[in-house]
Length: 71
Image 1 (cartoon, helix red, strand yellow):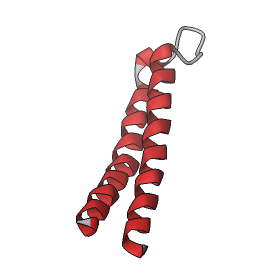
Image 2 (cartoon, helix red, strand yellow):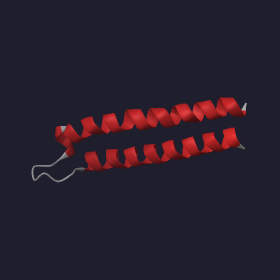
Image 3 (cartoon, rainbow, N blue to C red):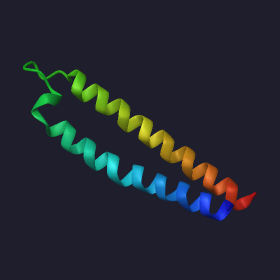
Image 4 (cartoon, one colour):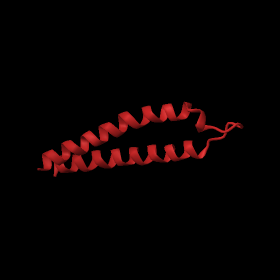
């Protein structure tokens, strides 16, 4: 069961590291990301926060998966 949990956590980490930065690249180029003065909008800030959370969860998932395999 621990092996299965570790695999799921590693897959979660991999998905977050691969998918979210690519998605954020599209968000950054979206016209809704900046206002007329070029400042980031709420649309941009919300997605930046979501990216940050996803990457923190990826690190946590990889760490817990490693601890499951080692411990």
